[in-house]
Image (cartoon, rainbow, N blue to C red):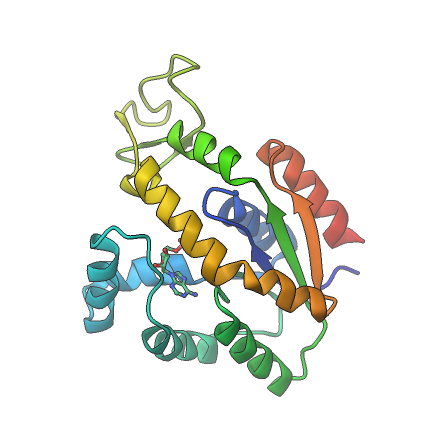
Length: 217
Ligand code: AMP
């Protein structure tokens, strides 16, 4: 029987969002992704959503300040149905958030969770992300389309564009924010004996196979 609670860690561009969604679908776990939840809130144009947008528009790859995250996430966690299992993606992102999540899980008698850590070097990330393009209409992601001589989306024939957060100067900032704020979580979970390191550099399909072996174990 596979475990029901997972946290996925990995730097921007490690493919953690894709793998988290694979896990959610394959094992019927609720996907709890704070990046998606915050983008949704920002699209709604609510007061807090506009604060998120302002931070993103500054383009420094910064995290949302802790006070805003806690209030927003508490509300979402409260609504979360934990009973069928959850994959957490993008939360926690700091040790403060990890302690908060631990307390919440403990209060629900959940201590049996694992942390999947996708390990990818900075050089690999910069190369992967700076060659990645996205369909301007449907959002489909294309790995290195220029080398593969692809210049439009095979779904909707729209133009492929580079996401502003994938531009090298912004990406470097996002990676350094990750190294400063989120990488300490690796030690945090290692000490709790929760951490499973996974090489994130092979293809998305190969990493997915490895993750399935771990989850099925
Ligand atoms: P993601 O889609 O997970 O890469 O998140 C996109 C952006 O949302 C991040 O660069 C942060 O600004 C913000 N964000 C998402 N989750 C968190 C979090 N747990 N704490 C702080 N900021 C977050």
